[in-house]
Length: 270
Image 1 (cartoon, rainbow, N blue to C red):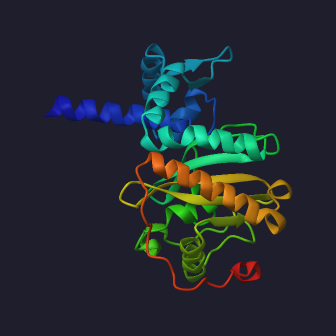
Image 2 (image 1 turned 180 degrees about the horizontal axis):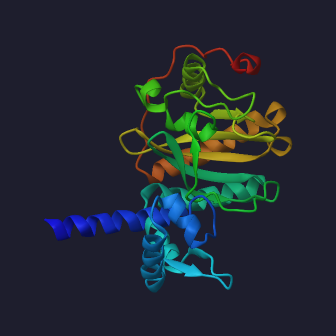
């Protein structure tokens, strides 16, 4: 069993080296070693092996970055995901039609994991959201993904504050998710980052379970929820319904509330 245990340990260390690059794009050996919790000699040896497999590569300054082979594997993984397969084209069309960013995410534990995003002319980004993670409680996508999660308090724990508008009280979060269940979409105004807003709708599989979420996002001035919420929510919900059909969902969703919950007062969130 010793050789097998040693092999498993080597794989775990190699994974730790690759995950170190989630912090920043380019790293020196010493930085990789510190982030992965390894000796510098071990990190250097693993980086050499990963470089030979094209999982990492070095630039002219001797810094390492993730290699092209990982792009190939990531492309295969994301293209094989049923939610991505069903949502990619509708999301791209939604971004083009509205000029806002269209995003598709699934839940991974206590975070929203982005499968794809498309930039609109009014919401350019300097980076892709694909593969990134965001907190569930502070995003419109996350509020949709929390539908159907029974013990949200155990899943999320203490709710971290990102801006003065972030919901940090579980009772308020429950009320926000009840509102999503009743109206069929969620909103978020500067709860994760200032000057950005978002609307989202849940994506459901053939059994009606929430398996993802679709959102429109961008600068608050472009999203302009005060005057455009009805227009944009209709587009998001209609696009989500089209995606749901591709996922096999054609029937009723979760039981709806008998009356609309009161709108959350943003001041009560501080």
